[in-house]
Image 1 (cartoon, rainbow, N blue to C red):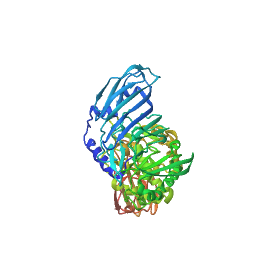
Image 2: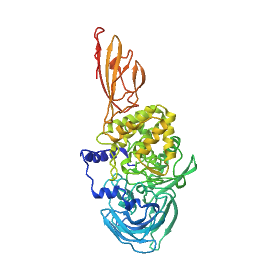
Image 3: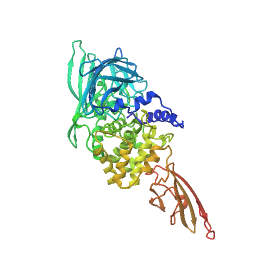
Image 4: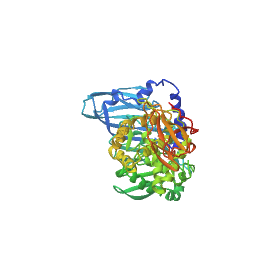
Length: 564
C-alpha cells in the first residue's frame, strides 16, 4: 500500500476521529460502498474488459467495462459502483438491450432485462464518461494524477486504494470479489504510451493517430490494483531465475533517469530472492514483474508496481534506523504486497492490516536475510516512535473503513512479538510460507489468519490477536519484586482489555540470563534467584509490551506481605 510514514499520519488521524465516538455513525453511502447487499452477493465477477480513452489535455475519461459474472443467486438487480461525478452513458445487456439503472450516491443499481438464474453466467457492458476525481494527495487520496514530466509531456497515473477503483472505472467495488482474469485497454494521445498490469497483447494505432494499448491479466486481481501509467518512458528489462523459472523484469522510467534506474533497480532481484525464500514463489509469474516510475511516491499495483522514491534508499532518504537506509523502501515495501495484499487479499477493507502489517514486516525480513537478525530488530524497534495507539488496527466491517494507520508500524511490532511468543523460527517461517500457499489468489478475513496460526502452532492466540488488533492499548506487564537476603521474588500479571489475556514473554530471570515466564491476568509468583530488582527487564526488542515495575528491599527479619 501507500508508504507508511505519511499514511500513518493520515490514517491515524482519520481513524481516531471515529474511535473517539462511543457509537460511530456511518451513512447510507458508507453501507452501500462497504456492505455486501443482495444486489452484490447475487453475482460473482469472473472477468472484466475495461476499455478507456484518456485525454490528458481535457483531463477526461471515456470508455466501457464489460462485466462477466456467475450468478450465485437468481440475479435480477445488480449493484455496480462508479463515483457520481462520472456519468453512466448506458448499460447494455448481453442481448443488446439498454438496461434501466438508477443511482444512489456512488452505487448504480441495474435492472436486468431477464433474470440470470443461480448457476448461470451473464454479462453487461457499462458505458461511462466524464471528468474523474483528481487526487489531491497521491497516493494517499484516490483519483487521477495529471502531471507533466521534465520535458512537459503528459504523465498520468491513478491511485485509488481505500477510495476505491470506482473513482475512475465502473466495477463491483468490493475487495471480496476479484475477477479471475481481466483485459485493460487504454487509448492515449500520439507520442504517449500506457503501461498497465499483466502482459501487453497488442498496440494499435487508430485512424486519429491515438494509440490503444491492450493488456491482459491472467490472474485474479483486486480492483484497486488495476492501473494505468501514461507517459513517455525509457524501457529496459532483465530476467530473474525465480522458483517457478525465468521471471521477466521490465522497468519503465523517465528517460533522464535511465542510468540511475539501472543501478537502483538492481535491488529488485535481491527483493525477490529474500521474499521467495520466506513467502514462496512470486505469485504472478505468467504476468511478470514491472516497476514503473510514477509522479507520486508509489503503490503496489499488481505486476506493475508504481515507483516514485527518486532513486535513493530509505523512504525519500529517511528511515527509522540506520539499517533502513540499506534499501529502497518503495521497492521493498510495495513489492511485498505482491504476496501480502495482491495474492492474499482481505475481504473487507477493515482487515487491511493483513496487507500492511505483513507488508511492513517483510521489510525487516529483507534486512534479516541480507544483514542478519540484529539489523532487522533494530529496524523494527525503530518504528516504535511512530505508533499512536489511538484506535484499533482492525476497523469496522461493512462500511469501507480501514483501521488505524498503526497497521504499518505497530503491525510490524505485533508480528515480531508473535514470532518470539512462538519461539520456533522454523515453525514461524513455515507459517508465513503456509499462509501464502493456502490462501494464494483468494480473499480472506482476519479470522482465517487467526485460525491458521492457531492450528499450525497448536496454541490458542485468540486473546493475543484480540488485544493487539482489536484494542488500542498494548498489554502491560505489572511486576512487583521483593528482595530479601539477596534473593528476589516477583509477582507478575498482565493488565489488558481482553479478559483472561495470557502471553509468554521473555524477561531477565537471573543476572545476565533471559528466560520465559507465562503471566496471565491473575497475579503469579516467580523466583528470580539473585537478580537485583532494578535489573529486571523485558526483552523489549522482541516483545512489544508496556512494563510497570516496582520493587522493595526487605530486612531479613521482616515477614513479606502478600500482594493482590
